[in-house]
Length: 412
Ligand code: PLP
Image 1 (tube, helix red, strand yellow):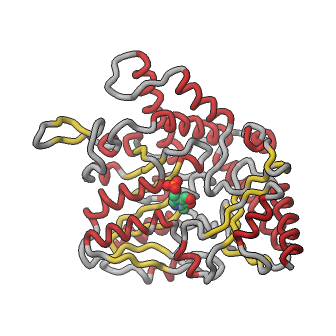
Image 2 (spheres, rainbow, N blue to C red; image 1 turned 90 degrees about the horizontal axis):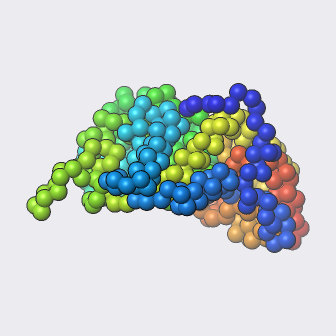
Image 3 (tube, rainbow, N blue to C red; image 1 turned 135 degrees about the vertical axis):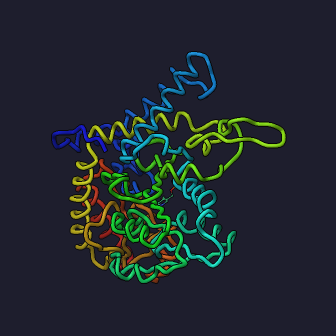
């Protein structure tokens, strides 16, 4: 939550801190519009990862030598940075996982059976990433519950009144995205938290596309769990975060058994460590965590509010620019949308679009975006998706639009 940046940052200069963005692809300057899948990394993160291996590397916890203590300190310090980014009351509420997918599975397996039983319902929407669908289906199968999905509007907007009609006395857990990875729709988490609380349901927020684009504050959002992946926040891959309310984490059984998550181990039985270590069995992703810490320092030095404003203006520009492309149909036009622009083109299949514009150095994603139910809902097999990061610029959309016109000429 800390915003150390008093003045408007120079985003063009910040872009220069991402080495990969100056490379060419297919003989053309790279236009990277695939940040929703994974963002590029600033030099500062690359340096932090290098230094962690070159200068302080050792396994964490229990070591009594200099390097182990240095590594442990660096690793544990990142819990505080994450808590600060999320506005979480305590660093002990921050659990490191391998990614958002693991975080959601952990919640489904360890918290799910405590609140969802036979005949109960788990409420999601049709706009979920598979990572926020499949773990709930697995939970439902395990306990004899049912997954129910509320629709979104045809323009991708979220209708909270309609959503409420899907809640009933059997609804025990609600799991929603902060921001849809296909539609860009921003879900009203604060209002939804109150609705979930009144319904007596746990509320899980898939923040993968949320906290990377805007300031967040767990106290204000009011949810019970919030998850995200480090690789979408300019950090390394292989590191994710699960934030959960202390009282809920305290009552959850371990996820995996092994070293580091125990208190006392005997042959017949073991007792477990308190959260967060209860949920971090085995050697954790030490360097990835340290890299995530550097990424958090980076975005906080810019200010999440500045990043939000910069990206909101870019998304508006992108829409305006792409609206001029003949035969282009937007999938997701909700007010205040964030981060992504999904579309189809009358003339060509999304896969052909992506392959062709790659020749111009333009990287977008084409496919179902791990959201097959949403594709079914919109009656398409796939979409093309351009997505941005803080380093994105208006000219990225200019090049994309020109390249799409070329696709139109080839297929037209
Ligand atoms: N949820 C959303 C909304 C996403 O966009 C993604 C990744 O694209 C995920 C979950 C899964 O993230 P990961 O693959 O890093 O675990």
